[in-house]
Length: 166
Image (tube, rainbow, N blue to C red; front, side, top):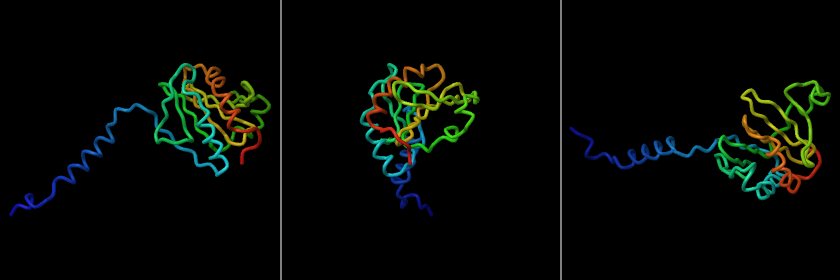
């Protein structure tokens, strides 16, 4: 006895096709973890998202997945911005403040203070300091990070007021 003539093949086949299409997307966009800040930081981050430039260091904006007002991206390899991240441990490390940590440096660019951390892959991670929400920017190896920070400074100053993040 054959059960195949009574079995609805349409739904299972459709489900397999949808799953295969989702897994084999030709989109080369980056995927990042979306931060989960408190309510006040979410509002500031949304304001920042609206103030971000469409081009950064000559690269077009191409936001990472999943889509969120708390993340943004430019170029390929992608420069990633995440707003509302937790305070980095290095920000309270006395070695950084004394200048004795070779992988982390504090400094400012156009009125925005940043903690710079060298990553193992040759790139850099920058996190705002002295702002009401922490904004993290990952710059891949080979990209001019000073141009990136100069390009982001107006938006950060406009959307994220000076102060101490919650």
